[in-house]
Length: 270
DNA sequence: CCAGCCCCCTGAGGGC
DNA sequence: TGCCCTCAGGGGGCTG
Image 1 (tube, rainbow, N blue to C red):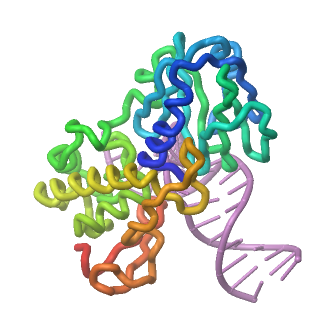
Image 2: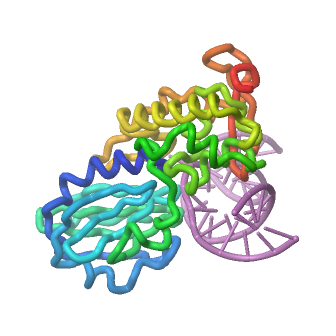
């Protein structure tokens, strides 16, 4: 499910209900996520006030007075607010109950997500090596060009590498390469600086637009406010293999790159 | 360091 | 309707 726009949509939906609130208790029904939820999460978090809800890459950082809950939604996770006492359905693994009477509920059928505890989240093992945020000036086409020299891998997995830039998953990598007119199969090292400048602009434009629309809902994504996203209406290529290109009418092609499905237009992308 | 591949897990959708 | 196969928005970790 979630790429950067979906995680950011979630953050914006839940933050106003969490910040300033005190946690009354934490209920863990299923501890087996990507890594086990710490046994002492309830003890660590209960009684503390939540200070700030941040996002770094696709991680949500729920900062309490002492310590931070690091959450990742994996492929199928979501976080939303429910009223305390709302019966939990299948796959609704965690409730963080607040004194307001609401609870932050974590749902994740595939359990590829994570809920960890850290005193220093930005230096946590999972976050320390992450590249820059795509919507900041630390990310630009010059960075793509410089890091791509000598890299023989295809450009699509290259821009999905979290050490290069974070938050560009399969949907938005596919869409950005279409918008920039670049064939996703090309070797990263063979692409010019000028084309990388264009690609970086398109990555930023598409991620920003997707956040504006509340993310992309393909099957089941809901933001923290329980609403779906609407960016899927604006997808040009992702999930449209075999259909006609919206720009030139050519048949869109499916190809596998780095173990992930990719779609491109053989006429618009080269 | 890099590229390529495997895996974690459940559910949806298509073919028969 | 049921069964079996393939695939899915992420990303850590292993091998060569």
